[in-house]
Length: 453
Image (cartoon, rainbow, N blue to C red):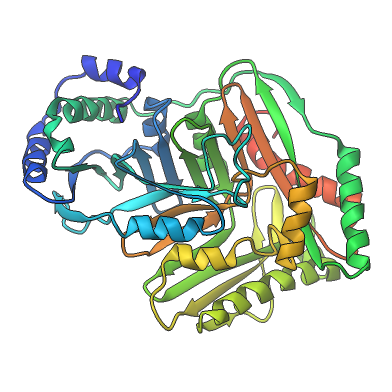
């Protein structure tokens, strides 16, 4: 992978960094090492969008929370999975990656970033072409926490000029910082047929009344067309500013669009044998007495309980000791309020985060229950979800990691931004209320694009 032409042009004009000798030292070690060497260089801290903006077309991933931010540029090792065993394929491929030395930062932990489609085969059409069933990558360069880390093997380490040029481009991007700009002007919004969505909700409630299922999450999508190419860095910056309580994620596989999300929902975090999950279901727009109204809603409490029960049951299926609060709490976001139950567990033995994710996904929060019935409903009646409501995030070579659910999300393809939102349909769901709920959820991305407040 070479950085794109814009970054290369910047690099050609940049002065050689003062610490190029650190890179040379690391490359010399890499040339004499088996496996991959991670060369860590100390750099000034800068906002993630400054790095994102510098490379407009390179494969990329970013992860931003209130206490950490990472941006991965390029691909040192790519892992793909297809079909029902896609997560297992990625885990097996990850075990073949060998990092034999780390230069400059003894405790640096290499992370692979990426995600998966909502269902296998669900990312094979516009705007999801190129994403695949599952894609993770060890970035060529990883920026985070005041460090810039290059991952190379002995053969790649011989390309000295290439890595020095890349480093010069990074130094220029870091030195210039980031100045946010408004997105190009809005041209059109295609909200889809809202009457069709209402009919979809009624069809689900009829199926629930017949005893065919308990819940199906009905999603819709909106296409925003701007007067010029949408800029992922500016969108990411707006989400960082507006939604600090959420995880901001960006994923761009090779030859694909750019998925961007500000999601409040953790699917799973694994650290050793410790597991953490979020049950996030039951929603109401921000307003007066919103928390009390939500807690008093039998419909929302029932919807939430289905999610808690499914997650707890899945974790217990691993033999885990599981802890969950008996009553849900409240998660308050910028536009919406959710019922929220954090769930923790201790596994009897270490599992890879993707192994746990494969069992959990899709939870009733974004699919429905029974799972097989809900996913069939979704496949037969919705446009392909691609990576919407799918697991995205990171893992390390020990199998620790964190995956969130790609809700409050959209995918950028040139001047088009495809946005998605869903609502959990259970007994008692009202089509008009569910449509309004999707509008509230779409406001996360629309607001960050400058299309609404």
